[in-house]
Image (cartoon, rainbow, N blue to C red; front, side):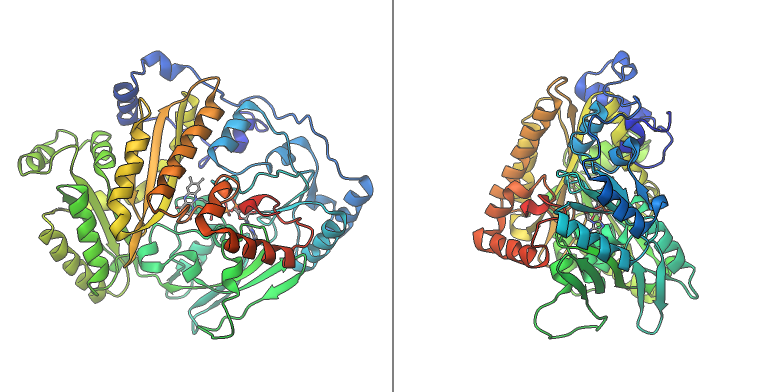
Length: 543
Ligand SMILES: Cc1cc2nc3c(=O)[nH]c(=O)nc-3n(C[C@H](O)[C@H](O)[C@H](O)COP(=O)(O)OP(=O)(O)OC[C@H]3O[C@@H](n4cnc5c(N)ncnc54)[C@H](O)[C@@H]3O)c2cc1C
């Protein structure tokens, strides 16, 4: 792979090329009737060198002003830099990059060095009505990073990636927003007795604190640690209308919660430059793990709900895979047809119905032991069979890298994407059934579903689909299929998003989801903070 190709921009994860393993190849052969030759052909590989047809539209005098503010070495105007800041990691972002279609790249990329520079940059952009897109790890999967109006991509990962303070007394960490997950977590884990932030999205390795907050994300251990909004105590946000700074009180009743205006604002209100987050003690040796198999999805969901509502403490990681995801997990591992598999089948855990559940519980040793024993009891009452620790610890080893497979799948012409929703318990199974029915209404589709963020009152559902692309019409085909999924989620009482956010991909549904008045309220807040609509225009459907 030469350095400055489209592929180098869209490729996710480890920069080395990933290979599909035997299990996945067999799955694709059996479900999509692919032949060996189909695995040899590379479709829309994206290995051409990047070339932009669209030059920087900014006047040289304006560019000079930015150079004076941030220094020549912190401004990029070349094709590759602009192309590599034009999109995030949404399916259509990647398709466009694979096709070399970059119609609205940013005009300039700026790597600001401090808050004062951001204030000055925003003043110029506000006066000149130049769009600004705050840029973190670029892992947005909602078209949130598409620079629809060109302008400035404000990349915070170069100079805003420091830990400002760990406060052991308050149990907090204050950080700059462009810090990536591993740098933050490694620092906390090795700080004195050891701490953790507890936020581990699947994109952890390549996403930033600012992006976590702006997109209102959730990590894989969110059932115990909460979503990012449960972790943020204070923030600093630079908006065109001024600087907003909140304080790290444990709780207040000072009107409504200002943090929550910016958590989920997706760069449409301002630039988050600092955040104070809660931290917890990091005691990995105390963690308890457990894996269970249930006879069907309904009994696994019942057990999960009872565990959440019983008052026995909370697991941190808590997941159920539906029957198709469970079968694929078994088929793509050595477990398929093993003695254990045969044993499970004879005692009633049948292929096509059975469901895996994984838990991990963190904290004090006595606590993790206690919670696990209670979980085992409730799981047993719901006719589960305990599978031990290994399935979940094996799963944890590939918790981030499984997502690297998207690129080799797209290389062989497979459309694959993930969607997620949040739903109350009473609507969960009907929603799961309806979306699965829709997903499977497409010929040759693999549809895997899991629950991975769980609450007393409901949970999320996370859908993964794979299906051969309609080659030559892949964009329209995807957009239509995706629309059908969102329509089905909405018709069955699911939220538009539980943790990916709205971006531009879901903004057409926002009005019907939250109502005209609520949308007008969001627009009014934007108008106040960003009167000229320069902050990530079009994101969340707001201008
Ligand atoms: C393979 C993969 C797996 C994923 N898994 C998860 C998951 O498990 N959980 C989850 O929650 N999400 C997940 N995501 C989605 C994505 O990683 C999250 O939305 C993440 O929080 C984005 O962080 P980022 O730093 O990459 O932000 P970016 O993609 O750079 O930005 C996202 C949005 O936030 C804005 N923004 C970024 N930084 C700032 C800032 N400092 N101030 C103001 N606005 C800002 C951007 O303008 C954009 O609108 C996944 C994505 C991928 C590609």
